[in-house]
Amino acid sequence: MTEVLNKLLTLSAENEVVEFKEAKTQYDKDKLGQYYSALSNEANLKNAENAWLVLGVKNDRTITGTIINDNQLNEYKNELAQHTSPRLSFDKTERVEKDGKTVILCGIPAAPQGQPVSWKGHYYGRNGESLGALSDREFDIIRMQNKAFDWSAQIIPMANLADLSKEAIDFSRKQYIEKNKKNEREILQWDDVTFLNKAKVTIQGKITRAAILLLGKPESDHFISPAQAKISWILRDKDNIEKDYAHFGCPFILAVNEVKDKIRNLKYRYIKDDSLFPDEVDQFDPYIIRESLNNCIAHQDYTLNGKINVVEREDAMLTFSNAGSFIPESVEHVIKSDAPESRYRNPFLANTMLNLNMIDTTGSGIKRMFVIQRKKFFPLPDYDLSKNKVQVTIVGRVLDMKYAIKLAQMPDLSLGEIILLDKIVKSKSITDDEAKGLKVKGLIEGRKPNYFISANVANATDEKEKYIRMRGFKDNHYKKMILDYIDRYGSASKTNIDELLLDILPAVLDEKQKLNKVRNLIYALSRKEHIIENQGTIRYPKWVRKVKT
Image (cartoon, rainbow, N blue to C red; front, side, top):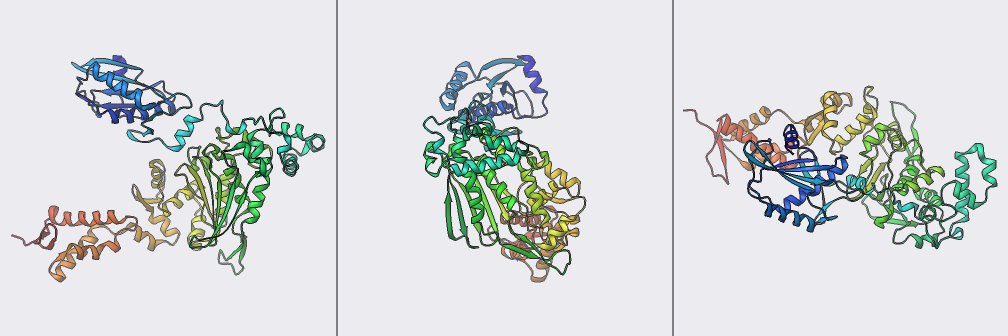
């Protein structure tokens, strides 16, 4: 084990599967459990046999040694076995002497296939050295490792062909022929049982859950209970007040068009490129409606017993949402790879929908949605992947025509970069690597998490005023304003300075950050530069010019 310790000590920093703790005499059991859950889950995700918790070593790899005894270690093991799920503990604990001090290596086994490890009901993970909650996506990756179970492929013994809609079967056959036109004559000669087996809707003539979802009669949805086969369309006004609604159930293959017909897809007219003639387009491209809705059906986590929601707002916004996390790494990753995903939540259902021409085999559906919106100068699709759901919002109008056209026409911008800039404008977070790439190209400025479009982009898109509001001015500008105020009025209170600066500080800062900025400016003028001093109290300061002695 000495070799293992030496290898761990050569690391430049802790990582997802290695944690150093000083723990000279003891270690907090609750914190131990949280790290155990995180390290075990990360070992699974990294395909490592185990992770390591090293006691008696600081974060900077300085060896302090530990006197934790065997009785304490047994207590830790028992505590882990009591409060982890599945019940686990250290797979090994070894004492190693290093530089005359004792270090304890605690081996943490990787989470079992298909079973994320929790501590007291909470699932933990790591981002580099940081401890945090296991993301929904990572939870799903581990859970789906048990490939023996696919909810959508399960056979329903009590169901038979009579529980499927004849209208849906006939429509699905037309869709199947659309994908296999050269075999049309042969396909038309198949009976329904043969067709459903060939299209992989059924398994050897037996009815699957996927068959009920896509082709089942409305009254057949009880076969998949407590899962729901329901799509709700809701119309709201611009103030988000409900005005109308409708619910759709089995068969989903027909419900998709029924929902599409319910959406009030008005025509949108606008003039672009200095033309005298207006363009007229659908507010919501039909492809985007079908793609978004079919994605909801294919990727819904039916074990959560939720429904698919389509919310239409009268101010030209359309939102699709389904239960379950977004399994791919990110939306940006999907667009960049432009290829089918290697993993699906419902593989059998997804394959069936592919065979019935409901979803795209190339995996480029999401990218095509972004391209369609970009070409119309409409805002890009906005994905919200929080709260164990996937929600995409489509805006069917131009929010800022001048900015949209200028941004779309910047010749050196890729679609991926436009998507990231769109996030910046919407004050959404981006990763460190994404920010680094944008900064190298001179597309954004600012510091994490307060990024904003750069002067280059602002100049190209005629957003110079907005750029100044977001960036603000140099500190010396604000300091001069404070000093000018004091020179004019003799002194300045905290309220005076707040009223003077808060409204003109960078718009990228929130209220708390603006207040901190003001405090830092006053601190610099008083403690570092010794230009002003407080002649009031700490609670009610009165800032004046400092008299030179």
